[in-house]
Each structure stands twice: as C-alpha cells, then as structure tokens.
Length: 481
Image (cartoon, rainbow, N blue to C red; front, side, top):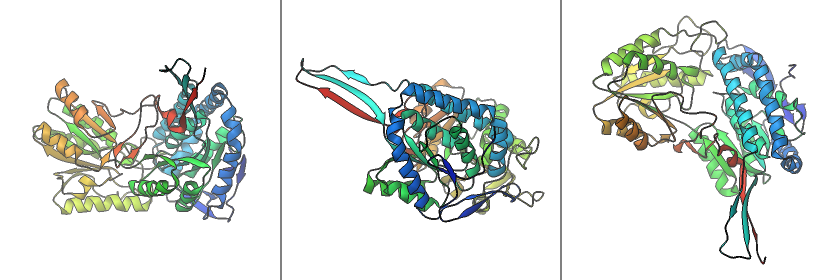
C-alpha cells in the first residue's frame, strides 16, 4: 500500500497546521528525527475538524450497521496486510521492539473486526407494558461527534479500541494522537481513508494537547471525549465536563499489584513475571508493578527474577533479539532514574539493573531493574513507574497481601499467582481493581471488558458492551392504542 506524507486529515483532505506549526518526531532509540509533522498551537484546526465531523454525522449515522461493518472489516484486512510495514514506523517513533509493534497492529486489526460485528448486535429491547393500550421499546443510537485523545505507549491499539467502537456505532471522530507517536495514527487514518469512508467521518489533528483538549470539551457538537493518559489530565477533563456535560470515558494510571503465593513453580513464574514486567519497557497501563511475594518463597523468587532480568537484551527495537527498547523520551527516563535513586536511598536493594546502560550513549534507555526490600513508605510503591522497574515486597498472610495490594489510589489491573483454588477465588473478589488476572498475564482481551476503578478511570471499553460507550439509549413509548 502506498502511504501519504504525514499530515493532519480534516474533511477528507491531508493538510498542514493552519498556523504553519511543525513538530519533529524523534526515534527514542537514536534521538534522530524520524519525520516532521504539522503541529497546531491553537484550536483553529480542531474547530475545522469538529465542523467537518458534525456535517458528516447525519449521513454517517443513517448508514446501517452492515454497511459500516463492511468498511471496518476492510480496514482490518488492510491493517493485517500492511502490519510489517506499519510496525517498522511504530518502532521508529515509539522504541518498542519490532515484534511487539507488529503484534500490536494485528491485535488492533482484530478490534476493528470485532466492532464491525458488534455493530450488527447493538440490539434494543421491547418492554412489556402494564397498560394494554401502550407499547414501549428501547433503541440505541450513536452519541454524535466523538473526540479521541490517546497516549503514546500503544500508538495503534489505543486508537483502534476507541475508533473502531465509535465508527461502528455510527459516530464521527476527531482524534488527537500523542505528539510522540503521531506517525502511527497517520498511517491508520491513511488506511481508513483508502477504504471509502465519507469525508469528515474520520479527522486527525496534531498539536498542542491543551488547546485541542479545550476545543473538544468546549464544542457543543462534541458529545463525548475518550481519553487515555494520566490521572492528572483526566481530572482536568472531568472538571471541564462538569460545565459542559460532555460524556467521558477515561483510561488513566495504574499501579498493578502481583500476589505470589507459596506452591507455585518459582522458576516458571519468575521467568513469566520478568517477561510481563518489561514488555514495552514497562510502559503499559496494566503492567505488573508491585510484586508482593510470600515470605516463604521471597528469597528464591527474588534471585530468579534478578537472574532473568539481567539476561534481557536492551537496544534499538529494530535490532534482532532486542527484548527491551528505550523509554519514550528523556523526561520519562529521568523519572524512572529518580524513582530508583529515591528507593535505594530509602533502603531498597538493587538486585539487577538500576542504571542507564553505559554501552548505549544515545537514546532514552534504562536497564531492566529489580528492586528488593520495598515497603509501603517508598515512593516507588505508591507512584506509577511506567518504566522497566520491578519491585519486590514481602508479605506473611493473605490479609496482609490484600491490604498491600489495595493500598493505592489506582484500580486498573491486578494479578494473582497461586495453585490454591480457595486463595484464587477470595483474592479475585477482594482486590479493588477492574481487571484481575489469576495465573495469567493477559486478562484483557478484545472480547472482554476493559476498565479501571478508583483513580484509574471510568467507562468500560471493549467486549460486548464497548460499543454502547458510544451510543445513547432511547425509550420510544406509544400510547392510546
């Protein structure tokens, strides 16, 4: 497939920023410029995109679910066909290993196909009436124009779960990708544009997050905003929504605990723990972070994870055999380094890593790190590291493990490893998180709901109910029959 030059996409046309602004996208592994893209500093571009989406909405909502599904399936097919080419660009701008980037494109394609099918199953209901001369039914209709603001850690998956659901529901979208990974979003828009979607249904703007966010929240045409990012920004959007009554779905921070009980295969669980922890350099919202290990197996487990972590290959994601790429930017690298330094100063032990690799002078790398002896008072216990830092804390009882796990403002994902059914059931029910994986690292799935509790967000994406996040429920009541 021939891809267009990287630009904004508004009302079916590739355009530069109205104010002429530009942004250089850097490869976090080399710090070299990958491409230069438009970057608007005002709300002018997003207002044009909102206008285009609002104008296109009546026509798009009038298409039936089967017509929308056909287009979405074509998008999924094109994504799979071009996954390798697109993944290379994703690796260049995000730093993640190529195999992870390609896998992300394949899973993102699955999301478009899933919602293509769910569009056909957004059933209503008929309500039996208490009066013989009355009939009641409930139908679902698209919410309208949807703003989508997403993070850089999964440059295409984050887009697909919102775009796929919104488009399947009959909504038009105005999307703003992260300034660190806009190229992946532009590739996806190009794929969508080549499948025959009407102009204005899909719009992409690139620029200042605050200016774009304000424009989306202030526009009466925008009925919903989907956001993936920090809890701090999520609260800002919640504050704005209180004035505009704009619907929100928010996927915010996480601080996932992992409860490891006696009786498990220590070597096997340790190896899998390291693989899960350092996926995408730890820059995963559901990444396991606080490893709570029973005191009876703490020593052999800590020794095993330190050994496995030390063997991981760090480097450019395009190089053969690389397992851990760079962090997204210098700021994130410094954040991770500061958390480790503070933890060590507070008494934590460095079991593996704990420094910037001296053999990689360019790029935003940090060695896969294992910290032992972490307690509740350590900042690394309460803060989201969002990097390659695995921390170990001991517990001596089930109740203590649950208390430590729930001692966080976040509630996105949690994990439990045990061979005892009783422990598994009680832990699954006691953990205050929206997603709990028991003896597995990937509890999330295209066909399953995805959402957090507490400060980790609101709304439930994916699964059967995901499409309804972008629809309104309407009662139609007929009387006097």
